[in-house]
Length: 166
Image (cartoon, rainbow, N blue to C red; front, side, top):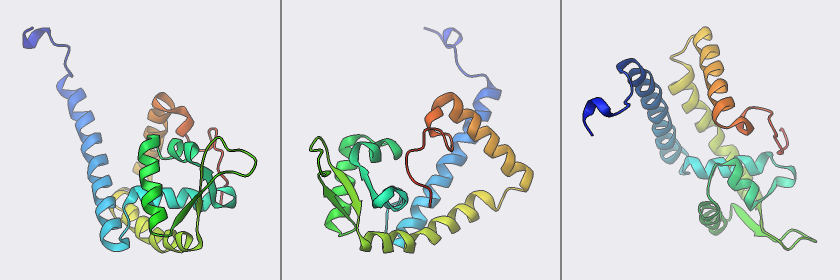
């Protein structure tokens, strides 16, 4: 197959996607580095702790936690195991339902999540929000929501949300 036979992206399509992808990857990398350096907590572990913090009774089924964090079950099991070893989470079998495990945020985990939250917030503000004016922030929100509606409608704010609001 020759170069001309490949249905490749046009220069404009490639420019748009690369700008989006590089910016998203750079923001994620910066957030990850800030969380590791300042909170001594990987961003993915913070995400688990924060979702448990927001859940009713600070408890979620492991399968639901995997869904919310867009993780595979094996990855969540490993992460929760590490968090459990650190005393931040414990695993329990739900009372009256032995079909699966649930993750429960401990008091120490709650304190750790709340300690790390300002680092997360500052990193997002400094690296994503600060460079944008009000109109650009609104545009970014609209673009993000439009892409989510196409790619993962359940991830849209308020869509099928089964965890409690703070």
